[in-house]
Image (cartoon, rainbow, N blue to C red; front, side, top):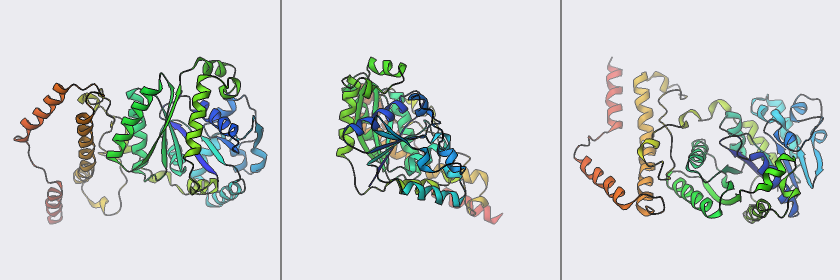
Length: 381
């Protein structure tokens, strides 16, 4: 059964295409049959100086077959130059979706499919990630980058992602800082949501990577003994060690992708905000930047009859439990790991004292009771 791994990141220029290409070559070096799918607007083609005659967009237009697209045996891997066509999949008509799923079912003989997805959280890119049973989320050890990673993970969780998220720190200064940052993020995710997280490792910063980029050649092939190549070999072994033969193959991935409705994805509620940045917790390395979705959410027929102010309050109430859970997780991390996160004991003591001092001034809120009373008044009118 083929294993599908999608590689993505929050921001561009994180080295996503570079990692995708070199990971595919590293897997092939371990005797695996690998197909690289260039899903990020032809970046794989540019990166490898390829000039394919056809891509997935041409196939969807009926100008060629899937076999016509595949570039065979590029340093031991096959390549599907999907180009911008891969982003069109979720918008195809039913008959074309079925044709596409059937075509890809016929090339399910590879051990691994590596999909170089786009960066960011566009609906099309999130659909790719949600359809993939395994996802490599590329990041760096800096707190801001891990905040971004947390946002993507939260977005996946809100859309009921049931696959595995593998964290990979690219161009890291050292493995210790990468492991520490990933561990903090995984710990916090485990406290606040149900997503399977895997600490994949780190690729250290290596000048040979820049040299290979200038030469438009994969560093794993050009500089096999470089520090980055050695890191990638270890990451490849981790991926193969965690291989799950029960995971659905490439044909199932394409079928799932064609069934995703972009209009129903829950994306708007997870934009960045200053909520935790201004609290001092962001500087401590706690990840959870998001704001409440006060507008723009889809509603069913019953919700459409609720007045606008009540709809806003309903949505606030719906999110209070999640926010409370995350704040509880933050408090626990601060208490358990104050030295590691640079939060001094006296600072944490101040936070505790403020919490005690504020208890007497708290006004208990019962949102459910309030909404019931407000609804009753609305019906009386």
